Length: 99
Image (cartoon, rainbow, N blue to C red; front, side, top):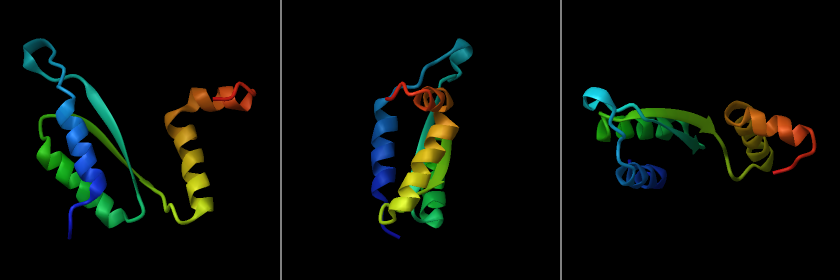
């Protein structure tokens, strides 16, 4: 299987963000990365690759299904993102505040 573009971008992002050290040299910063993928198999490989490449990082790696060729699927993905990751923003939008 060839390299996945998203994994390469994510690796570069993580390499550019220095870990934050707490007391006793323990990293305490958690980084959430949402992998939006059409293929669950490729997403699972990406998660394994990132965990292997950055074993000391506190990564929260979430996988979300999205198929950019299917507009309904993209809309559903956006609604899931708003509901799961931005609940306060979604409430404000429902009240007419907009983005």
